Length: 374
Ligand code: COA
Image 1 (cartoon, rainbow, N blue to C red):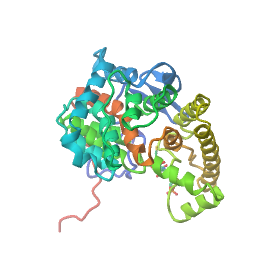
Image 2 (tube, rainbow, N blue to C red; image 1 turned 90 degrees about the horizontal axis):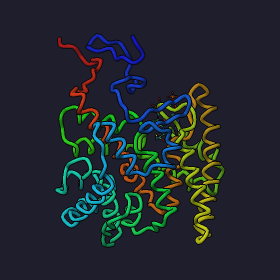
Image 3 (cartoon, rainbow, N blue to C red; image 1 turned 135 degrees about the vertical axis):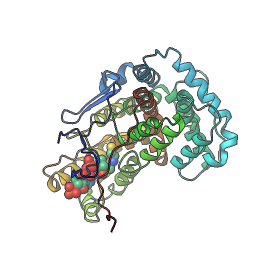
Image 4 (tube, helix red, strand yellow; image 1 turned 180 degrees about the vertical axis):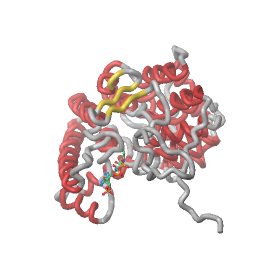
């Protein structure tokens, strides 16, 4: 059997592999080289992309690659979509205020009447995440500001400082996570799109997949781990976690066998943020202290996992430094996964368009191991 083919039908003997290494789509959108630690998004290495394109530009490029149609007005359309979504907030209050921010997002986009096309959904996500958080805090939602970019507007709607360095750091985050080949949530979106279903349903499926701790749900627990290891030896704490049968969050990856390149991008963003925050020395010191502690815990975890799994490199993944970066921006840990969704939605939408153009239903096979009729 070829490595990239699944044996199909009831006689197949292959073991379920979580589809590891199985090619189920062709894409022009992004490429991951797990051995070399390379991530190419819309034709550019992620490390370089963050320096010369913002989230809007990258989204436009991804959609253009998927549809072959230029997207000249995306920045304006996205701002209009945020404004339109905000107008629906009063009608969605009970959904937006649900205790779990991902559940709230799912419920709100399913009920929204502000438009069900790609850019309406993309524009709605930061509005609903921010409004939901404000409502949960007993505060009034803050309207989007015309003229702001996606990242800056999200911070503003959350009521957080949104100066240029912080807005840039969040923009770097959104660009870096905008697409990542056929990850679980993108695959979920493509499966739903392949049935001919609509954009909202495809994005809802992706949100559901992203919520899981093995995918986008890890950064909150990473921060819990950093807190838990502050006053103790990280190695001893990590050993207890492993002994209890739990995984170390933010470590390991399905594709990368080296350190996730996005971890370097976020570390660099944090290092750049710190001197820019000279006016706020306490915040700046807190960031550097957190970063130093995160590196200590990462090294302990890497060493421990290398001892346990000498044949399987388990290094820091995107979620490890996501936690540190988003915390430095003041984003509450309960919003880490929804913030991931705001960035990754760009990739989902482009993949949905790409999948639709194939006209092919995604429908794999299962090996039957159940009882046979008497
Ligand atoms: N901590 C402890 N052990 C880990 C681990 C982690 N973070 N990640 C993988 N392993 C171990 C598994 O227990 C397994 O051990 P075994 O062979 O003795 O059973 C082995 O490494 C291979 O793991 P597997 O689950 O088959 O790899 P995968 O490619 O399916 O999983 C992840 C990839 C990301 C799901 C996995 O590394 C993980 O759970 N990481 C923690 C969650 C996380 O950070 N998620 C965000 C991903 S971006």
